Image (tube, rainbow, N blue to C red):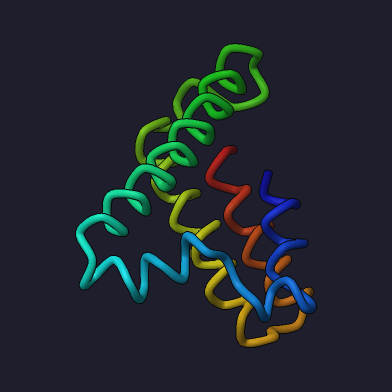
Amino acid sequence: MLAFYLDSAEGEEGRRGCLVAGAATDMSTFDPEMAAVVAGALAATEAQIGRLVTQGQADGSIPASVDAAATTVALLCLLQGLRVVGKTARPRDTLAAAVATALKLLD
């Protein structure tokens, strides 16, 4: 999942950005309906990340000592941040370093 977001944060796709991230930073402030759509999209992504963290803990690839709830929110914030920062055409290696650092949350 992190690799997908990293790939999506660069090149033309990165400069176009993410509809959810764009709506979260722009339209949802003024439009309650859009805010609900954005909240739903973010909740779905958060749930998916949470499932992956829980599965990792179940199969032993993520230690049980990792706070699943806090790590899930931290990764959600990183993923959405990648899409926002990707609009600035940051070098891939810079974004990859951020992803590598985030992976340490799972140790």
